[in-house]
Image 1 (tube, rainbow, N blue to C red):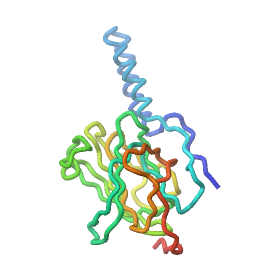
Image 2: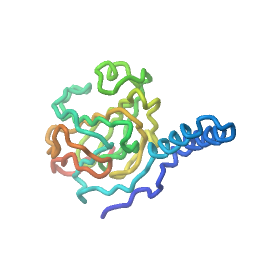
Image 3: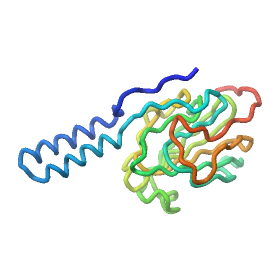
Image 4: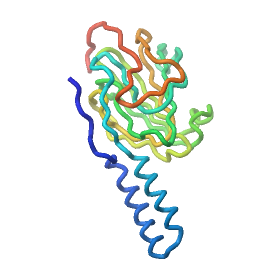
Length: 218
């Protein structure tokens, strides 16, 4: 059964930014100084934090959904820090795409590590070494998975609503204005996307877990 997501047109986390820009707009109108500039900025801020309705393309608990809007830029095998090999799926998110992050599957966040760093172009290798980054260690019903969230030059912050505990599939768990997300999946995951494909958070299916019986959430 598919569950509806939040139907708020604007994510509640964006209202503080919209209010701030709105105050600037009112001041600009009052003093008649570049009011059109602040009006455009107000509209763009609302656009940046839009929260469209999202439903998974397939009703399958073995499906792995995209955690963010963007374009697939890399699919490869990768030796992770735990010494095991995983399939790495990297998604590049631009400034104009929806900023809401969503859980790729029913999962439990076991650990959240944040590395404070610089805000550089997310496409550069230097950004991955020195940039602002959040790493989530998670466990789904079928396998462990890891997620690296890398902030781009316009992100300024990676905002997470939950840093530990359970998440439903496609549930909102954070905001990334611009950057990229690296998803590390078990080698036996069947990937159904290719480099260059455009995906949507909580809707597009990246692949499917291999059926080998549910594993413990502990």
